[in-house]
Amino acid sequence: MSGYRKVNLQDGGEAVLHPQLGDTMDAAIVCIKMGAAVHFQWDCLHCESRQVFETANTFNIRGKCEECGNTSDLLSPSAHVGFMMVAGSPMDAITALFGEEVKREPKKDKKGE
Image (cartoon, rainbow, N blue to C red; front, side, top):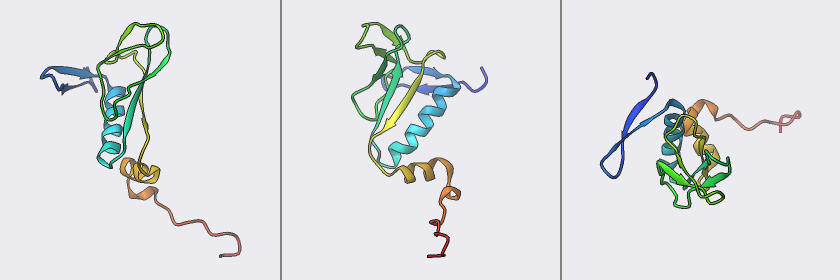
């Protein structure tokens, strides 16, 4: 199970995150720590409809689809989970994720102005 890791849940239980979900969570946590509001989105495993959790900065391990009514296990390796950052500076998020090297001096026009 290389790349898989255990995490503690709020209810005291444990969950195992597959590598892609772990990477998504790591990126979301960085954005949350910067003060952004993050809304997790996921695709229903039954009808493939895009769903969004209404509560910011909260991830549920299961999601009930508003389209078909089925429940998806979002810890499944076949689950597609992402997030939307709805507040905060995009440049701050990029810098936090990739480091200071992404910050560049503003480009000057050809005349050097």
